[in-house]
Image 1 (cartoon, rainbow, N blue to C red):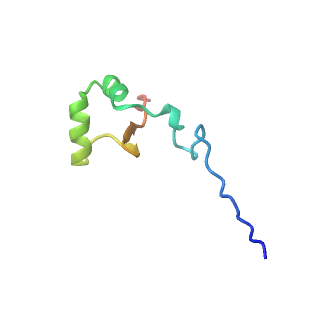
Image 2: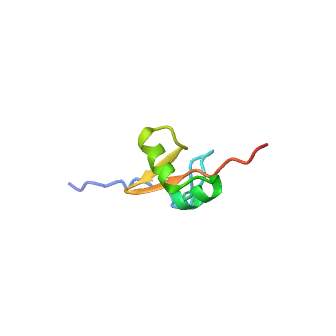
Image 3: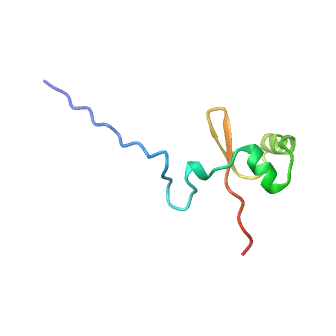
Length: 71
């Protein structure tokens, strides 16, 4: 009796769910700090406190969502 193994479709590295930026558009802490005019130290402390800008982790890597432009 043969068993079929269904492969789950993996999301593309260049696509993102609707409403979220693609992974390539996410900013490193250095890029975000320069754009937001804050230090890397402040970003690290804010992450630990839980009151900083929204971010995601990929393993040990941290990425920030792009800054929103004022409307």
